[in-house]
Image 1 (cartoon, rainbow, N blue to C red):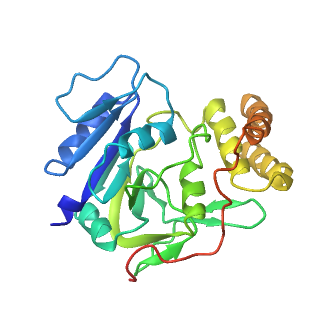
Image 2: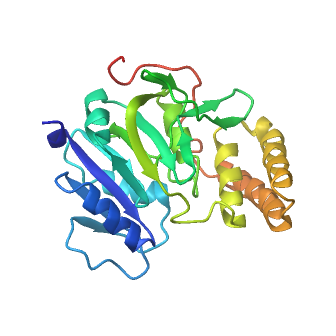
Length: 264
């Protein structure tokens, strides 16, 4: 049984309603909730309790530390696997994920990562499994021994992981709904700052100005929100501080792809 080889690790911050919806959808699977809410959950589910506001990477790692199955699937609490999504990911194995769909349709079919700092979301749905540079952590199957880099504040820790492991597989027939923004609104200046920091940390320091320019251009296209423009600069400063952390980086990201699951 594929379900005997995988544990669903669900970091939870705020959206109790979304978490309940997810738990109902994955009934029968082995689940571990990482409770990173401020007040604590009163649900009768296996869980690890953190202090609140620990961040996605730290919450995922706290859950993975208690996983006893060979593999795990990271699931955002505002995500819902559709149909046989979990079975398909488990059969594929390694580092893989589904097609993400949101309220507006296809949200992600993997990410293209350039050598010069650009990360582009793909939305073209393939007919067969394909290798991609990176996948979203909203629904991500991985070996349970793998850990995310906790120096990433909120965003791009999933990209760094995929680059570090040499790429991932998109499982074309698997679908997962992702509401998005359950922990932090994508339009919030804080989210902008975190995205800038995370994207800069995926590349060499020499690429920082280009990454900042890409984010500033995006903000201008979306309406010249001055709070978000200031957040770009704040994210850049945060990346500079994190680069001075002893032992950084955790690894040297590689941009070539390698196989981490069975072929299509």
